[in-house]
Amino acid sequence: MSFDVPDDLRYLESHEWVRVDDGTARIGITDFAQDELGDIVFVELPEVGDEVTQEEDFGVIESIKAVSDLYAPVSGEVLDHNEDLFDEPELVNDDPFGEGWMLEVELSDEGELDDLLGPEAYDDQIE
Amino acid sequence: MSDDERADGGRRPATYDQARWTRGDEYEPLLSEKHGERVEVDGPLPDDLTRDELELPGPSEPELARHYTRLSQMNYGVESGPYPLGSCTMKYNPKFTEDVAALPSAAVHPDRVDERAQGILAAMARLQDYLGRIGGMGAVSLQPPAGAAGEFTGILVARAYHEHRGDERSEIVVPDTAHGTNFASAAMAGYDVVELPSGEDGRVDLDALEAAVSEETAALMLTNPNTLGLFERDIEEIAHVVHDAGGLLYYDGANLNALLGQARPGDMGFDVMHFNLHKTFATPHGGGGPGAGPVGVREELAEFLPTPHVREREARSASDGASGERSDPRAGGGEYEFYEPEHTVGKVHGFHGNWLVLVKALAYIARLGDEGLADASAKAVLNANYLASQIDYEVPHGPFHHEFVASAGDQDAAAVAKRMLDYGVHPPTTKWPEIVDEALMTEPTEVENKQTLDDLAAAFDAARRDDDETLESAPNRTTVRRIDQASAARNPRLSWQALDEE
Image 1: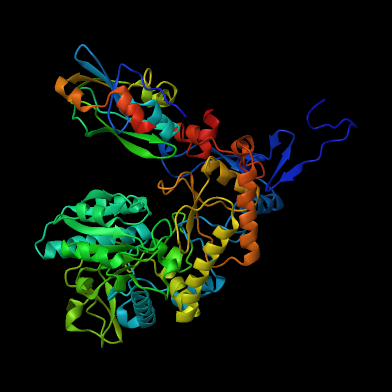
Image 2: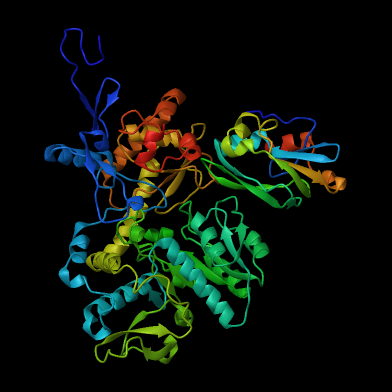
């Protein structure tokens, strides 16, 4: 089975993606991750104004199979979280890179991006 | 023409589908929907605390009798057929144990003084002694009310031990294949959990263990045979590594059914363990009801056990860590007494634990005796191995003991399980442990005969031959059909009243 791995994103080994646009990092989980988890039933995210730290957990995702921690690909202050996921957690299954996004974070250290996997390296990891 | 009428003008007969009739697409209504009767409520309580009226079902007695009989038929238990739910040890609970627990003399008020409850105390002491000998442990507390509560208590004992020595430790090491309760018990006791990755053979990897253990390690929690049914052959080495670091070795009694009379956790180097009476010793699986998860410790840790603890007066020795004070000053005589262990972790349950559960386990142990218990384990291992040899699914890890984990391969293990319901048997545990793809974790226990095991194997193989479409629509022969788990979790309706909200 092959999974979507968009070229314009960077990835954490624990299957989170980040898209940086003008100093703002949007964060979610990958197509592979949503498929592994199965039907998502609950997502717990930090509040706006909270700080997240690279490679530390920022929230919890629950599917009918498992409960998993979510890890932050980058550090920074939370500018926004996707409230739609509270009522429609299935958005993560339907559109993990689009409407299923989770957080927007003000990137505190652009250098952190160098620690992340590129699309090819991530693709290799999930093969 | 309505659904209820046939082409010949006659009415279509109802079909009784397992426990509930259906007529066309119509299902037998819920009890609350039958002959409702509105009753006015008028009581002495203030109006804002009471309802004005209440809808009560008003079926006739035979209707009510049928309703409850059908409900009982909608259930599936070990008294309906094989129940090979891996890691759960769903053995049959012999009825004589219920008889023993129902004896009027077994019902004693927990506040009765020691000297007037000598029979109960003697029975408790005897069970402590049996369990201690089975586990190779120096002392046993019967107080914890469930397996997970036993784990938590055992970890509290380990913490008290370290603290008493002035040795603050912050971590508990747990293998990645361990039961979820291990992680939870360690976290509840205030420890950070260090997850230990399994080796490729499904056992503890000694190098990984060396790397995980440190002077912060309070304990390693392990079950043996492990979740794959594999015996941890390096257990003495493992004990050595943990003890060298100053940690304790904790035995999760989940898989003790493989060891009865064959090997003892205490002899392997384990310091603390819990017993799941509902698994190994044939007391009812709770479903939230009263249970018991006694904790055994080696002699040196006895002074930390929960209070009160039972002992034989004559057997009191300097090494048992007792304060020497009786729990009730009015208690003058008798051979047995409750006492408070010197550095007790306190109480983990009211009074002395769930006594009527304990007495069932005592009855079971006493009836089987040493030979019977050893035979139960041997047959549990034989049955698992025979069943595995008869099914077409691959079993990647071995040699295994009382349970095995088959792989459903390209099939969805959960769908296979649902399909097995159609073949009239309870399916195995699915999708866990994750070390096996699409895991079918299977534990037939010692109670099944060869014919039943053959039937069970036939159910596995029939599901293996079914195509994906058939599997995905299963089950089709059960009262309740495929449940939409995602909707159930996203929009839980937790009472019958919520049915009206849609």
